[in-house]
Image 1: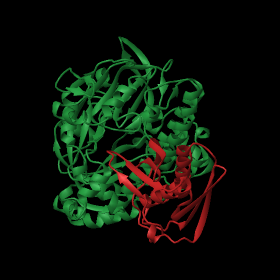
Image 2: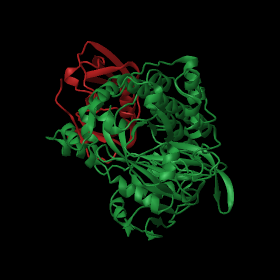
Image 3: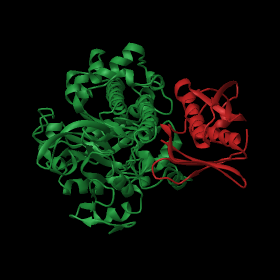
Image 4: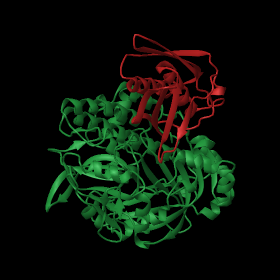
Length: 139
Length: 482
């Protein structure tokens, strides 16, 4: 499992998350892993299955939001929890592969319920040291 | 008092006005004490009250309740009424958890007689009432059956034996929002809702056993079936994943609508559409469906609580005497008649973290409650207690028939987690005399009592402002959290 590439920032009602990555694909990997870290202890998730999300070309913020929303839907609808994420980018299209397994209430601690990933404070910027993004999850 | 570049006008000890500045269609009105305003001006929530005042079709005031805090687009604790002809509907004015609300169940049981069996009862409730992240209910509904839930609300629960006619009578809007259209709910939203009926969820949702600790208005308390020392059951939940998805789906559609119609608002989170536009009509139809789902969700939770308590205490329904006091939502938008500038108009009232609080005599209230006003439940933090209020005359005149909904957070979740670090929240709650069962210790840490404002101060403001009246205070004895 990769080292932690996200942190929580103070916010009154919800959770504001900051993630980093060397490129946009790596940023989306970090964001997806951060999202699943908010749901459960990823160290206890076995990477026995895979889900692949294809995010069409678009502004980086929109690609990030779509990747996060679809990742959340994987949990909400299919009860899939990811241990790790890997992403590649080709012709502006991001392919996000999530390795994990179906949630098991006996093995996977449930941290909190996430209602949605919102557009509030949504940003994805490239700086000298790579990419940084922020997103807010409604809990 | 100032908020950024705005000078607030003090109207009374409990009411403040944000003057109508450039672009604002109406002034802002905040219900708060001077001490509370000192805190409120440090948050961005007042900016959101100002932003909401810019929306097309808003009437009279953009309103903030004393539990106001920052929310998505609209503040939580916000009320805004729109003219249907020219006004807009905004999902941000309702929130992600559509028709999130509270219901109170009364019983014939005294807390003192219950206390020896409380650990056993709390364990049974924690086991039997589905709670926590991704929890599934026993009642799985899909296809046409889900359509019926979305269209009929509590009436569906009656047809399946989970509710009585009395439950329908004692639920806001008789447990059914009109105009619900299941076809307006996306497939993803339906999937998120299929196995979540009768589940509590996580975060600030809870099931609580409380003791009626103090009665302020004996006649109203009697009408609501409350007496000192009584054990009551408090349920806080909403429309679960189905409602969250309806909100998410609508925000994207409305963002497109705004671009196409060059509808400009001060904050992109105020995504909205004209009420009569197809996007507005579709959202309201989906909102009504999600609201009906929420009514059924709380009804099934109540049914499970009643069954579990009776089984755990080995009592029949007559001896346990568990019956609904009332069920009311605090995240809604609905059409209601209100008087504005001397004329009664049909307005779309957005309440986000605000509760409908109809006054005595209102024709929409159950006959037994009509002399006293609508029951309103204001949960505080899990260590301190909650209040039962009754809607008062001023609610219609001052706040489109609304009042507050809770204590309001004063700490972020990350702050609360830091604050709880190294402490045992369970032991701390036990010292306060509150038994806690929880699915997630992290949620518990985020919900520590210190994370919330003083609910007594919030309730004091709405009573002094004349929009609600205190009936009783409830003291928590046990909490089940997701």
